[in-house]
Length: 155
Ligand SMILES: NC(=O)c1ccc[n+]([C@@H]2O[C@H](COP(=O)([O-])OP(=O)(O)OC[C@H]3O[C@@H](n4cnc5c(N)ncnc54)[C@H](OP(=O)(O)O)[C@@H]3O)[C@@H](O)[C@H]2O)c1
Image (cartoon, rainbow, N blue to C red; front, side):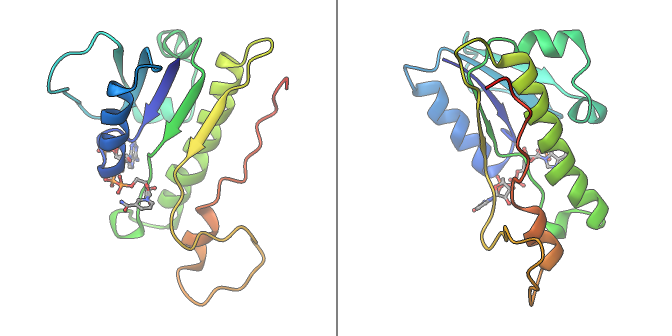
């Protein structure tokens, strides 16, 4: 199984990578990262792709799309907390726009005939699906923490 990981330099993503490295069914791992990421020991099943900021919004680079092709699933632990973001727009960009663009691109590049791409999105506590619900605290952040995007897929 080929898997795409994003957020691998983070607290959760590091552990997800460790688990994927030791899982015998996962034979290929593509890591999307904006920062240098060094593994304790080089592993032939890992391919690290250095993303520029724009790459998260446009999966048009042929090297990037080639790296993704053939993947079966993604574990998306890329995310930002309000204390580390300058404003609500920046949070929305990372939380919603990056995730939507990734889901669209992965579906386009990786879904094959008879195969279904799986996108695992790591949300957060108290995320609110009901976008019209009035919330007492952290309303804007909790509303964007749900993955409401449904990719237009051939399946
Ligand atoms: N930690 C928890 O207990 C917990 C519990 C439930 C849910 N979550 C959720 O799980 C996700 C990951 O949490 P975490 O604790 O692992 O967070 P973290 O340690 O802050 O890691 C965040 C990851 O997202 C990447 N990232 C953030 N902003 C980015 C941007 N603008 N462009 C590219 N990459 C960006 C970071 O890359 P850089 O290293 O390059 O910054 C890092 O790899 C978050 O969405 C969080 O809300 C966490």
